Amino acid sequence: MSYTAVLRTAIDESAETKTRVTRDDELMRVLDDITAAVVDCTANGRTVFFCGNGGSSTDAEHLSAELLGRFKYDRPSMSSYCLASNTAAMTAIGNDYHYDLTFARQLAGLGRKGDLLVGLSTSGNSANVVQAVLQAAEMDITTVAFTGADGGKLAGIADFTFRAPSTETARVQECHMAVGHTICEIVESTIHPRS
Ligand SMILES: O=C(CO)[C@@H](O)[C@H](O)[C@H](O)[C@H](O)COP(=O)(O)O
Ligand SMILES: [Zn+2]
Image (cartoon, rainbow, N blue to C red):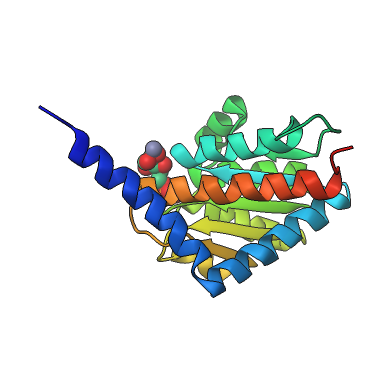
């Protein structure tokens, strides 16, 4: 038995989803605006927060780590935090309050005006990501949503929404990472040009 056909289809779909982004002027304009907002936040020494559930939680963690550590080369650390990374806080807030508040309550404690929040949700409807975006808006924190093609609830409330052009969760996540990595690359080279 060969798995080649399924492998080829999935990998082709992943590549096509990313190619659809670069061919869509509106999507590229939104990405440009999002990149400028992240550069601006970081240039001002503010914090870029990330959050998401499931695979998007580790995508959030991955992108945050690129800023805190290094992307391509050695340079000063840039302030970033993944709200899905603190297991004790996640479980305590989920247990004592409500799972919907797991990210919002952490942001209420950690966030400051001028920070930026990136919420990753393929459906755009994860309640704890939605609550985090609403909390951010109350604190003058810029909000960015990475969603799937539908946009979901997040598209109606975030300052900027990047809708990956697919409705398949896995393809959307893969597209988010391609875009997220590129934004990290631009932030690194803009704020701390390679010497
Ligand atoms: O990684 C995957 C699927 O690729 C799953 O773990 C997925 O992230 C979970 O089902 C999430 O709960 C989906 O949430 P969301 O993307 O709709 O916000
Ligand atoms: Zn997954």
